[in-house]
Length: 407
Image 1 (tube, rainbow, N blue to C red):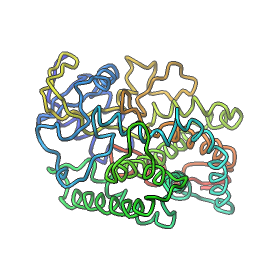
Image 2: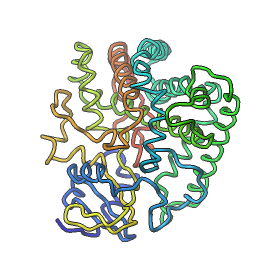
Image 3: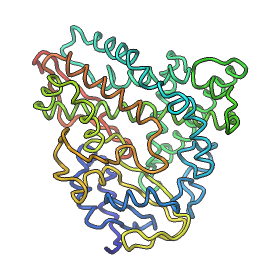
Image 4: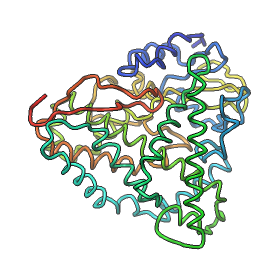
């Protein structure tokens, strides 16, 4: 398997015109598992090679190991643990997990099921009398953002402010200096600073005042690994606030879109609510919320599919392509909630496997179950719907659905 330069294919995938259906382009890209771009970066698109490199100890998540600096990185603050390598990554992840899941708080996620169901029910109650709803604005966004605000201890009334910040940050993730205005990057950098300053202000109020929210717990916890610094806590909260709802918004919205495109599966879920568990796993494979990890770095020379990737090279991981690889999944372009051995890459793999995956799964399971149960003859108003600009975190910006058989 040889490395070829295929900049046109990658640019076609990144171009907004491909956002509604990038999968045929992924199929073309997979013909060469590793491709070298004109700027010296590398793109990996096949399941085996993606899983191998995600478990490769010579792969770095720390931007400081890139031989060519990423635009705007010099202006960004302390990275979150998702963008660090062992042992720093492992230490900070352990410290965060003490308050977010097993073994120290094993019942946190499962114990929220009743509260999550109540939030979902309240949102759906608000659909009464409406012939048309927007699954994004009316449901998929307010649901997880309410949850993550509660977990972190962020005032819900401040949500409009950090929604603007988060949108600017997400929009700047895939900044391309050749094609994008500098304003796109500048807005993302400024939003990052503003959000961190806001979280830092909340954190100052938590010191010496233990409470149940995550900011308070991190600010006052002395565990086996000691206590996080304020900068580390702010970076962790920033990560959870962005990743904790952005991916779930996309997963819920992509899920409802997929069910409306497959009415036989929608009806089956209505009749068999327990189907939702494997169904969400198939959604994570078939229409994942995260399509691309836009950069990783090589600690040293790495050989992938007979291609040597030099030390310091930027590596782009096409996760959604890997989850549609026919060499790993039978009939990969078919949505099949009965699929077995579904080891998708929807939440990544390796040491950086999505920290909030259990919460996102439960939120989506409850959301889709209740939407399918309670919506009256839902149908798509537009297909495809309008999509967000980002090819990294891919999902509709709006999903208008008619109720009662109307259009």
